[in-house]
Length: 463
Image (cartoon, rainbow, N blue to C red; front, side, top):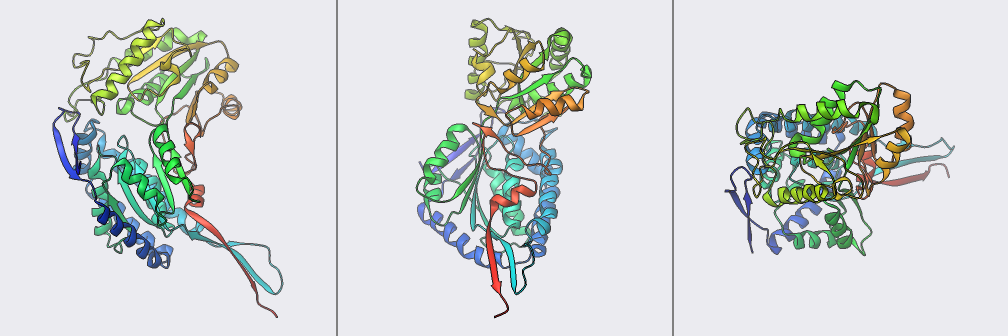
């Protein structure tokens, strides 16, 4: 099959069709990136920053139309999609651009008479970015802008659900007058991705996606001495202590669980609440959840759109039904949301209690507007349950006691610990996961370390 179709979850219509690259086109892309990197490596940080800032400006100028395209491709309500660009995309891009001059500078070492010694940060070469559909601009900007700023060239392969995002990047770099080959995109099959990874002209892979996808990337890298950043699955927990500000916790955790129809890498998928406040928390949580409006995402009043595809909704429904058969209690009637329809992407949010860790609902990634809530006796039980997971991307603690949050956070097996917030990436902090949530790091000053290699200069100047 030489083409693919993007099916809009809004009405299951064919939104667009694109051709997969052929072998000749892939060869041209690889050769062009390799050649372009030689010149791009020699540019200054200021020159790279000027290009990247023009790229950001292009995105801001086109945020409304790009937001509409995004809604049509993956179903997030139109009231939210432009903000992926004007808020998160801009914040992350600008932070990494501003950090580049200091974080990519030569590293001095102690002075030694008669010698000049320093460590230079060299770009890796060509970075292959494999980006998902759920936050197609936010996930990709984490790697693309710092890779370009570090002197690498980039080849972007976007999910077939959101191919226009890759094309928009190309338009932005063209508008910024970036040298030919510094940024390119390809539409490819999974097998073609594996072929690209095996090619000696790819020097680093930045992948965001499923655990199985990460395993496929590692398999394709076998025998090659390159690295990959892997941001994979999550089953992120929230722990609500009895001393929390209850209304604040409810409002923010509901949003963290159901924004983007629960299709967020660091969305809240399981909640542990100290038993003293379990009942009022659950009641408030359900009450607020029922205020969502499940409808056509092109309508301004819609706050919950369809899931990306029917199969994703069916998977979540199967998890819910399996949990119910094991004793879980759903708290939202199936007919409460009039547009909830089994066998379509339109899935209503669901809250379950009487859940436990024998259920897939509490252990395996759901990636849907579904959450289970368990009571716990104390911090120790909460920590044990939060760590009882194959994943470790983020975890949040809801309390008015900062020292308790720090103490609990030190014991959690996770990449990020939040207190009184969730589902957010601070570009000043390392974005990383543990266990099956992946490896590597994007954003922060550390994000530049994985996109460069150290090169030592040891010059004997007095002989």
